[in-house]
Image (cartoon, rainbow, N blue to C red):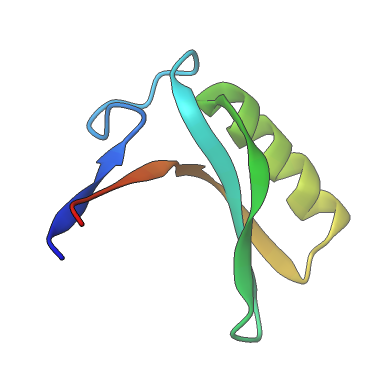
Length: 73
């Protein structure tokens, strides 16, 4: 099975109005990680990540580009 992942946004520029982002997170002192469901713009994701990090200092949050799988069967 061959394939790749296709980004929903331009990976070279990050404008606040670009759609195709979600919020990724990980524990600062552990191995647990994940992402929050829902698509938003880069500006919205960056702002929400800062708010979440202020509320929960045990985790690191960041805007993360959504990658769609493109695999052949």
